[in-house]
Image 1: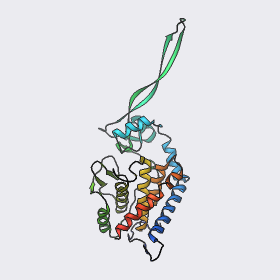
Image 2: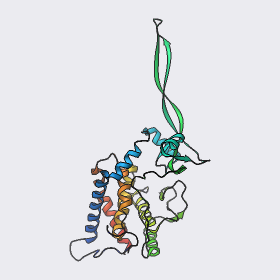
Image 3: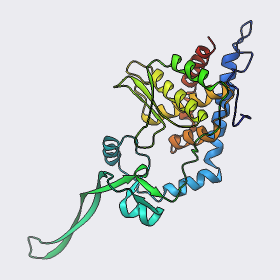
Image 4: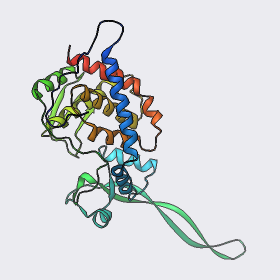
Amino acid sequence: MTMKGQADYTIQKPLHKEGSIDMASKDVKAITEQLEKGVKEIFTSDKYIEYLTFMSKFTNYSFNNIVLILMQKPDASLVAGYKAWQNKFKRQVRKGEHGITILAPCQLKKEVEDKDGNIKEVSWTSFRAVTVFDISQTDGEAIPTGCVQMLTGEVENYRDLIEKLEAVAPVPVAYENIKGGANGYYSRKENRIVIQEGMSQQQTIKTLVHEISHAILHNKEGEEKEADRNTREVQAESIAYTVCSMLGLDTSDYSFGYVAGWSTGKDIKELNASMEVIRRTAKEISDKLVA
């Protein structure tokens, strides 16, 4: 947790030791405990409070609208209406962008006559289709990013490490220009991992470990295939943080905010429930890197 910028990716020694103590497991346990501590701290940090304040400007979307958003733009992160982006956030929807259709409640009223001939006003809630846009479809002033900052810096023996990780990945890895702003994704349907090309070396390594974790745990036969999206993201990023720490890479600036963001509204115990899965998978990946 002390190295930034250029880093040696060598696994910290001793990885294994004679006797009953498994030093790799011990290292992973210490790292994941540090992750939990970092996530707890970020919930009360000024930076995270700033992020939550920013998020409070957005509408609280219903379950149905969340489903609609995911169906139309699965990589959406922050959405708002055309005017809201202009007036609240000083950002402009780019020309030619296709909006996301959701349902907005509206109150309707009309006068009716009851059986006694009295006129009274009745009201009811209906819904109308409205269009929102994701932040990736806009340009303009910078906004808080949920404490998740892009990692920068080079990695010693970067190409060798990339090749080792690609060999560990259970599916093919491709580097492409991903539309929508995602750093990477694992596709169960296409059975492959895609990483955004042109990112920094540290960000590329971290993202690749994250997506490898998805491919191991969340494939059609994986032990965590039925986990909800929040749990899947917490698991994958926690594993990425743990493996990168074992490689001598400090991703805390990115990973703590990422995990905290996906854990918002949940008790830290829900993260603990996944700790054994996180520890075991991180060890599996790191062991293969030095095999």
